[in-house]
Image (cartoon, rainbow, N blue to C red; front, side, top):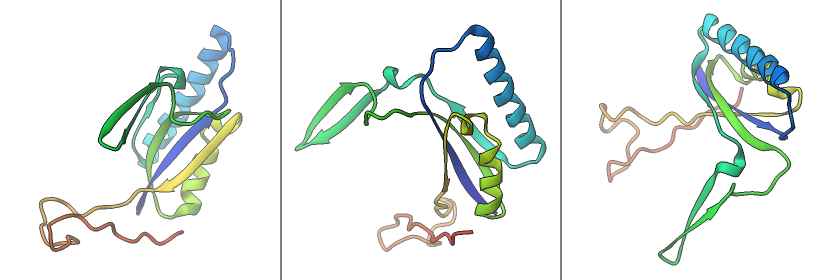
Length: 137
């Protein structure tokens, strides 16, 4: 089984309180289905991109700017972390996320680093984790 991040990108829109309830009900239903299927491993919703702060370090200087890293139509609104047998299964789950109707769900495999409790397993000579290769589904 591989863990996949299902990254939710949606275009901001003006909604009514009733529409907000409808959207939240749809997300709650998706979450319940993922939990019931025992594929859910985590996830979070994010505040709007306008609340973001971006941090860069250039030439030893920390540069802090208000707003998201990139100006795009769609905003990164949150993510689910699931465990699936392969990419095809992860895509099936991604297609059920309510945001897929108005936006894009990016499906990305998670890098599995070796456990810190098992030194020498996948570590380089300096004791740093070496990313494991993940075969695409």
